[in-house]
Length: 284
Length: 231
Image (cartoon, rainbow over all chains, first blue to last red; front, side):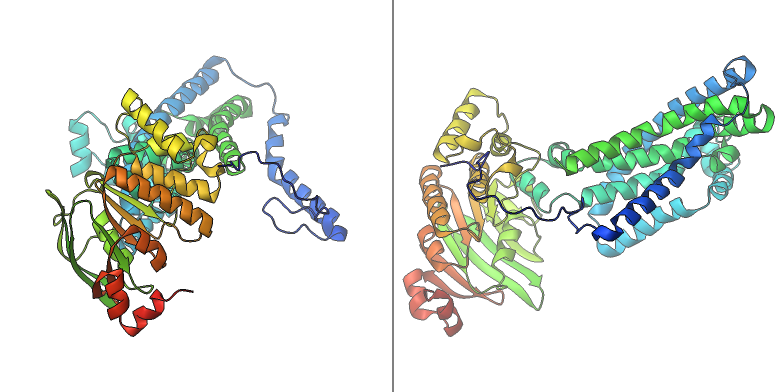
């Protein structure tokens, strides 16, 4: 039996068709093409223009002294505690997404509404609500305090707030990723003798990995950049967003700028890398 | 012995079917589109749970309570090959083997590869093979764990006659060797006749005739006779 792999085409070359756009749509008419290009370029320049603020004349950058030490400490706080929050988000959010995916349409609508509510509530309001709901005098806050998990101005409060602000993004993204798995593949894997856990590791996860990673990167950006809720629940230990605000208030732009660059370096590469990986996979 | 008695609602009617099939036997489910044939297969495979009834294969009770799919020992082939796109052809075929790297498994896989003519594409990604090859890979993958019961849900649909003939020959060869019990659904009576000597004719969820193909041709209702007529 002959293989189709690498079979050279025996057909005569066809006349070149007009080049299609990336998604297969017809390109703009030639006379308007330069206008479209110029407009798109202008948009891109304006979109990225705020990054030019890095070169603004703000005086000497302060990376030493008290302000520098506080900046370095805030970077460690943000990276360590956000990483811990993301572990919790994945550990809790993935099974929840798997569960929601198998519920009926009505139940799923309710779940999505609940997740959207957690996303849509304004950050500052969420911070105040979290502080009140987890107050030490309350049932849950008191129980957490007995376990040594102080629910305000502590690492636990920081992580808890980050989980709350980001888990909705992760679960909704995970639902999209899981929904993109071709129908029936997991059932066929189960019929071949694989139990649910092995089906997850061998079929679900490999097929949804880029979507899950994209959801995680979104959650990461949301959590590490959170200010409004964190400033209420966990002013201490100060993460990067809170420390930036403190610098703005007390130390000036010279102290802000190096931390700002570090902040962007911590937040941007992961989602950008995952976006590029997913893009390559789509076009592989 | 496969014992099936099930009741399952479908849009507009209820599928109510009862039949038994001896171990190693073969039975065709035949009838017009929407008769409920695939629903019967889906209930036996475990993709759907019937409202009521009993499904039993030998000593294993499939329903009730519903037995998890991975414990049924059922192989299923559908019109969609449903290959795992992140795996190579070899990985697809070996997917259901508990110890794919054992010497016994390697020898078995090598036999499947040779007899199913998959040598050319064995290491290729499953997404880069032809439609005909994909059906062969799906067949090899289903056969690899040596299922006790095989369900065919129009696996030859959309293929040209040459490919169907080749696949049928391969399938019958493997059936003689492995001796699995078979239930097949297809719209083409000539395909089913080669696979199964017995047929259950269904319409609107009910069994309207049962027996051999010759008996069905003699006793078939008017609507069924049109389906049995050659093109």
